[in-house]
Length: 628
Image (cartoon, rainbow, N blue to C red; front, side):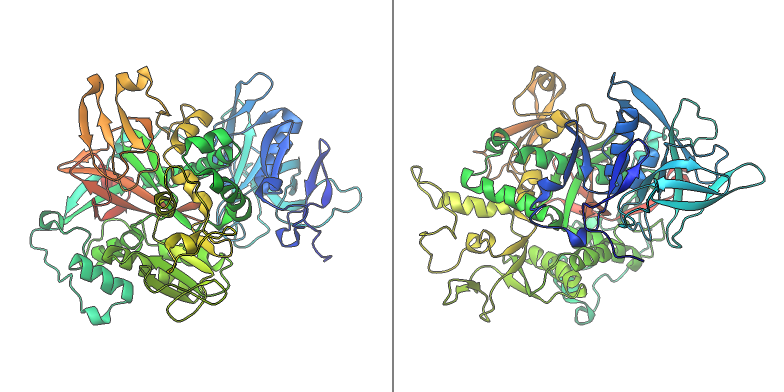
């Protein structure tokens, strides 16, 4: 076979004279595509996606041939679950119907063919446009599979074998042994033989409390010498393999239905994509950056970070309210999130120790997904983990260290800043004299910014630590590491944007009335005042300085903290579900932009803070949750 065509090479023209391009990213000309913005694809000022991915082509083909577009979706396989597309001529919604591979309703030219996640399409699934249908094969056009120029006169990417069964059902054969075709999506009013996506019984979204038998007693203090370093640190901190120090809660766990988990997984993927779109929107606007409270001298660095390292985010945590009243996201901890050890290891280990056989552990794939992310991180030298000198941060850092080292990356932990020093060339080095080049941190980026702000008098201008002429401190500070241009930091600097609460009003403006969002504003509106609202400092963390205000301006709950002097945003009040003494918040982890696991934060207060407990979460069949 001839070698792949260079990225951006025209491969051929699909029906409707729509160009198809090579997406061989290994051959990108960095002069032609210097940053993330250069990859954005527009037609008539409408964003199609990123060059030259499969979804970008599907959206562009449909727009150029039909004048329609479909909603932003986090993964290609999510197209199978779309219910409509929008005509850009009159903005009407046109129904979409999905037909499972092997359906009695045959595919048609112009419909979308969808692959499930897995195998060849490991993370995202895949989408192509069907252009011709025969009894024994179909022809499709697509991007991001083959990168070869089409033969003269060819007007399709490839053919797939198909057959019609005796009952008239049409089945398409996948050309990859490890991939699965979900089916095809047709714009039609006729739902005969279409997949039925009936509304779920919302009672399936209610969590259920269960308890260990009263006689159950398990030694959850294993021989500490037989444990891995992160386990030893956790067991030492908590006094055992447990998620709470509250004695009355140590036999409690909660169950969530499979249907609710499926929705949470989808919502996590979709919310991540929406937060990324909002981040791009913010970084295009000086006015919005001002709203976010970032120092002006940092704006070029933020934009450069987004352009150069958009795909370098390893992981973050989304916080949800999940109940029969709906699934709503509160915020995104895209920078320095916590609870990975609890989700990815402890809740499963607790269930094993206590013989809990209900359902499955929602965190059992988190570690392997983190390992996969670190393997793709391009970390090519020793990675330094920087953490505060704190026991809780220690087991958190050691858990991440185990994933980093399993990915083949040498790793060293720095606790506090006392061991940092300068070398003769002005670089920051560790206690062994090794230069710090790559960092994963438990400190928040805002902590570094606060350090910069604190060092300036009111009439002084902030200065970056590696700017020419800036005086060097006797001992390196946090900012001397994190804000050096020659140090690659995870999570990247741009994660300041989606982690800032000011992103929430931006999301509401971009996606008004979205089912997963809460009304959020920069100023208090009469509607929020009437219905009840929550005030949050735009750079707050760990549930600090939050106030819940009910109808009639009644203060329902509030927390103190160190962010009382920060600008506020206002978010609609949406109650956390409460079972017994516990308010329940579902936290999901996103790794490489997709759902990777879930855990449960609990508190007697309706505000979840950094001091709130966790309790084990299990995913059970719908019938198990709903049984009398």
